[in-house]
Image (cartoon, rainbow, N blue to C red; front, side):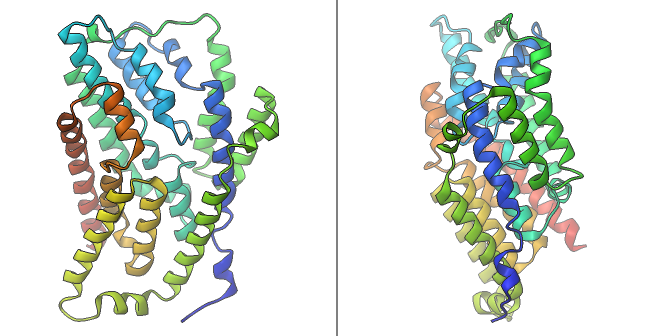
Length: 348
């Protein structure tokens, strides 16, 4: 087995980004950042405002996004106890779930991006080169659903609070969005400590209060995952031969192995776990598999019954389970198709 001491620390700088994500999550959650400012944008164009709200609520690096989003989407639903109102409420369950789960396709503070960049040495720009087709398809599906399935009069206007001014929106929101853009050119582990310092100064949060949100167990798990990925990459040929052999049946075994990993992601329903499965698989069999494997593992996670957000979403809005899963399945068909296409193009 090939081993070097560099395997223990290669990629670990990305844990700085993970730490910043945990601390920013507490700040943003308590301050209700982003979601409260959507009423300032196109306040009389309800469908556009709903779409913008859906995009913003997926921006926050908060682990329990659904809990933050539920009151917002409840307020956006015209509820007068009529049959039409009940149906709208059910549709809003779909919107709330889609709105809070596109972060994994782009956010530099999301565990998929952090784990992928750490294990493969990707820059954020390289990560987005893989993710952009998925993100465009996801947001297009969300926009189409809002356009075709929800009528304008079914959406309540968000009240424009006088204290949510454009000036405060610039102070609170723009710096985070700028940090994401800067991450295309500067590694996120250099960018987000500065961002974190800025928000500490703006909101004057006591450090002890924010540190309560720090997940030391997750921090350690991802550190160990990075080390394991480094070891597998250095020994990928021998590990690959051990798992699937070198004969004609190797692709059949690989297919069953891949289906097994998807079933695992479906069972676990965790963003960190499906991201970990993706990078470990690709560490052994090659990074060219990444688009397809990511799309399949994401689909398993996205529709997992053990994924807490699914239960919260369809129960809170009384969305029929069959309708809920049929809609999610339709989206995942698009994403997996894109994964197959990206893999095919990379092999040409």
